[in-house]
Image: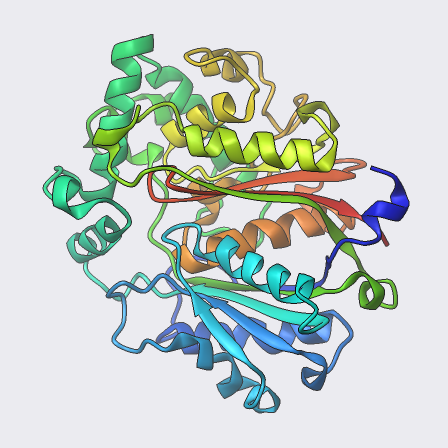
Length: 395
């Protein structure tokens, strides 16, 4: 894509990111207050410059307060009369909010949009969290699966192992990679390098959680928030930072796992194909990828869906070190959801923040040298709502 074409794309011009983990903030209102005003300030703008607000919160029972599109204005009173909307698309809620903002700008209704993603999860007991997360599955058929939402992915892992062989070792290597990377992420919930042997060994501290998935194969229950300011290309060119959406794609798949091949991740594949085609690029053009490792089996399947490996051969990507931080295509240099944490509504926004930091050379110890183009994959449910972004610095 010629540079001139890229300069016609909306761009990320500012951001903010809270720590992820078990936070003292009482609710999403408090979490949003950490990032909404900070992102606007980081962009070098004033709240009065914002034309619309797009909030991503899953909720689904995590707290009684809903109508959450109205909450950012409580910490930034100047936003009180700015049009605001809340979107929800399971674990891809953050990316859905970003697409809402991009669509708003593309329609010509405004030039500057604020995106805020947040979730408060840790106030609920573990069993209740598991049940709430099942709202991202097809309850009519999947609500009674042992292990809650982890059980859904446990079944996916079982199907994969039955078809292609036991890949527990490769899942442990993915977990170890992401935990090692997470040590360098100042926002990460768990900044500890557990090592491969710990992740690959069943123990009191690393028991089976669901089917073949161990505790180290599962992402964390987290609180957190992240925010972006997205601007039209003409506005972005006047500001200090500009990371453009070279491409973006959204593809769905049918909700019940019983009505599709549960390990094909066909919606994810379609989203990647569409985004790469739209951007006029291949995977070889990407310098890094942030992908949705809610469970390690998801990251393995996503290698195949994005085209790094043929079906059943994702293990080769792991064994060859392709996705290590020093590999050909680093995946989850941030530590991913596995180490960083997974506050549902914040996750997609966080992925975009972290990639924008990489492309601006502002990622600190996480930095991939000379990163120029980044891919992002964020999914809702078991690869039901699938979003891919390709980001590239334009200023």
